[in-house]
Length: 88
Figure 1 (cartoon, rainbow, N blue to C red):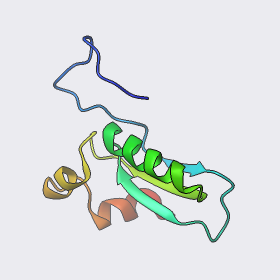
Figure 2 (figure 1 turned 90 degrees about the horizontal axis):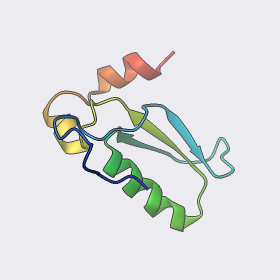
Figure 3 (figure 1 turned 180 degrees about the vertical axis):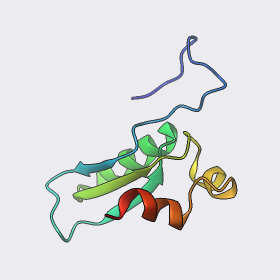
């Protein structure tokens, strides 16, 4: 699990790679969850879902490592930005 240590730059938000993750034996009926690439949010979502035993997709959106509400307020998490990045 992710944690801060003394060599972490406090000016840079802890982030995970922005991409589509698969958890469990996913299929076309599996739910798709959405979050930003803020590491603490990612680990909170995956930790909660792990206990559910439900196979799911997790779409992690690039938001400069900001939490969901902060990314929304700062304009980093927008419908047009998601469409631009993920719709083919």
